[in-house]
Amino acid sequence: MVSQEFRMANDLGELIKEFLQLIYLIIIFYICYQVLNAILGGTWATENIIIAGMGIILAGLFVIVGFLIHQAVIIGKLDERTHGFEKRIDKLEKKKNY
Image (tube, rainbow, N blue to C red; front, side, top):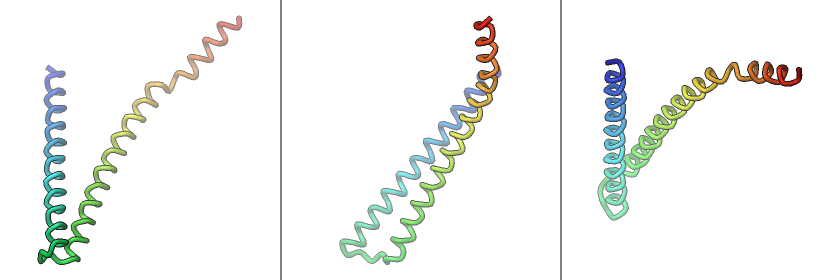
């Protein structure tokens, strides 16, 4: 029962992640279209292009920050699991020397 709830939560997290990636791609394609439209003689103002580019950069920063937080959690778990290894190795070396 617990594993099913965990799997459902994991699937929900993956679903949200994929949904946000899809929205991100749609926004990128839209901005690329607008930039090409402005370059080829459209009426979109240059300031709006710069603001949109800054929005994409800001969204990318949020993704990077989320990734770094995730990595910090994983490294913290790894550090917690391997915390006592030094003491265990010292004990084994002492037994080996006797």
